[in-house]
Image (cartoon, rainbow, N blue to C red; front, side, top):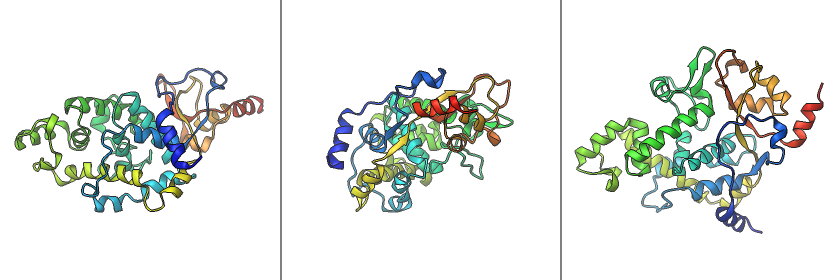
Amino acid sequence: MSLRLALACLLACAVLPAPGRAQTAPPEASQTLPATRNGLEIYARFRDGRADENCDDTLASPRWSKHFANAPMRMARSDDDALALFGFVVDSLRASSLPTEYALIPFVESRYRPGARSSGGPAGLWQLIRMTARNHKVPMREGFDGRLSPVESTRAAVRYLKTLHGMFAGDWRLAAMAYNAGEYRVFDALRRSGQVARSADPEKLTSLSGITRAYVRKLHALSCLLEAGGEEREQWLQALDREVPLLEVVELPADARNLDAWSRQTGRDAALVRRLNPAFAGGRVQRGHGVQRVLAPRVAPDAVAASTLAP
């Protein structure tokens, strides 16, 4: 079967469990569930969930297409966590019935690096500032910055985007602008331009900053880059055609004190768990803060057995 035919099949029938509540059962309880999924399934779910499939050359931005040209290559690299994280975000958005264009925001904001920090104060995959994080109940305390947690920050970002999506009549472009600049600035720009959300042309919101107006162009350029795949699209699809860790939200047991030790005990890749969860400073899990969640690769049955037998 050709890669194109395989991708068409995935678009038509690939169904994956949506990320819901954190997993609290022991690893043995999920032995029948897959621990990995094919990268093409992630790509298919992204394509199938877009609100705007138009990649007309007249709309594509050469500047931003060049700027983000490395994004598809990040997803193609087997030693990069970007594709697995992208899959987690795509699943989170689709579970909330939101367009998957929003899954491109972390490429713009942090290049899909959970531990990214900016000099101005934003941090994490979604580059949340402290005020936004607090407003959306992202935990922040000594030894734990929830903005650096893909679990906490993605929950907050998806909740915020869900609100913005409703505010702006389901127009993902206006919602993305509001994510960047704040909803009140976008409402004011609509008023100044004599437009309403349900029929607005974002390019005519000239009272917004150039950075905010470019935000949609960046996301559109990224979407078109992933659609086109460049001149070597077949080679790129072949690189995606590999098994990728299926990431899930897991509640740490009350006695967990260290991510490395917990990973070994549950048969998980300790280095991967640390990379995915930089919110836990030094990999330490502090006491007395209620339920604490990590993003972790789902455990394969053989890994569970090995960890159980280990001394």
